[in-house]
Each structure stands twice: as structure tokens, then as C-alpha cells.
Image 1: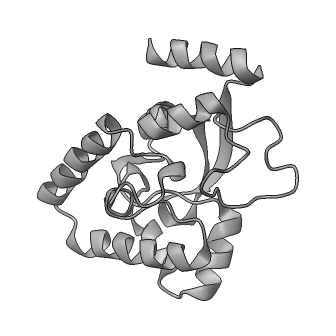
Image 2: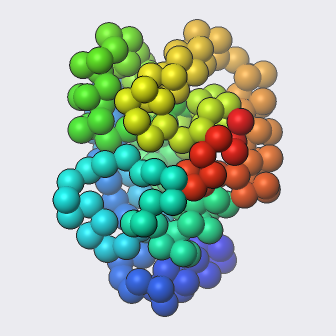
Amino acid sequence: PILIVSSIFIFIEDGMPIFYRQTRTGLNNKLFSIIKLRTMYKNAESQGPRWSSKNDPRITKVGGFLRKTRIDEIPQFWCVLMNNMSVIGPRPERPVFDDLLSSKNTYYRYRYLIKPGITGWAQVTYHYAASESESKIKLSYDLFYLRTQSLFLDLIIMLKTIKIVLNRKGAITDIGAAK
């Protein structure tokens, strides 16, 4: 029901398409398509890929709400069912940013030794990375998770994720709010 209502609001504000597919990097650097509810205006990246930023003008009003509540992430459970993602793990990144970030940090590709996740330690302990320097900090959280994976840590991540969703602190427009 949440997806149906969200789809209607996306359609009313900016028409079709409702869903957005994007290539991401997964386990062992294998590429796959991630599916999300569309939160940006059509052709938002007509000038090329870039990181989202605080108050990003490409994000629709409905999209802002969907990002804050993380409703836009629900379709990614299809990726979990298709065995491309896990519920918990480092967030999968776009290949163009992977190439940039791995050229700056030799440890970057280690994050793909496990399946990427819908949520993860970096997502619940640090804000959205909107630059190379912030991505480097976020990488330290992903590497910490790789070293200390446990059922207990996964439980903490799930509880923090639920808190972020309920407090609507999941949006990049609230940089720093997820701390």
C-alpha cells in the first residue's frame, strides 16, 4: 500500500516513470541494477552524474519526503530477493564514483568483499557523503563493519535504522541529522 500511494504522488508531481533503475557495484565488483522510487525530476542527471547535496534542486517535493522516510528504498528488497544485496552491508555505489574513490584509496574496493546492503553501519552513524572527503570518512565506517561483523552489530544497525526512519532523518537534505 505504501508503494501504491507513493507511486500516485510521484505521478501527480512529475509523471512517469515511477521507478528509477541505476547500475551499482555489488559483491566482488559485479554490476547490478538497483531499483528505487524516483525522487528526482526527470533527466536530473542530463549534465552527468554527481553527488546529491543539501537542498539539491533536482529532488522533488514528494522525493524529499520519500528520502526522509526512506520509503524510496523499499523497492531494493527486490534486489535482496534477487541475491544482489543484503539488508545490511555497505551501500552499493555507482561505478563512476567507485572508480574515482578507489583511485584515491587503495582500501576502497574491500567494501565489495561482502554483499552491499540497503542499510549499514556507515548509513546509521554518519550522514550522506556528498564529496570525496566525506566518502573517505564513510569508508572508514564500512571497513569497521567488515572487520567487526556480527549478529549483535547487525541488530544495532537495524534498531538505528528504525529510529532514523521513524524520526524522518534519512534524507540527504538533513546532512548530519542521522548521527
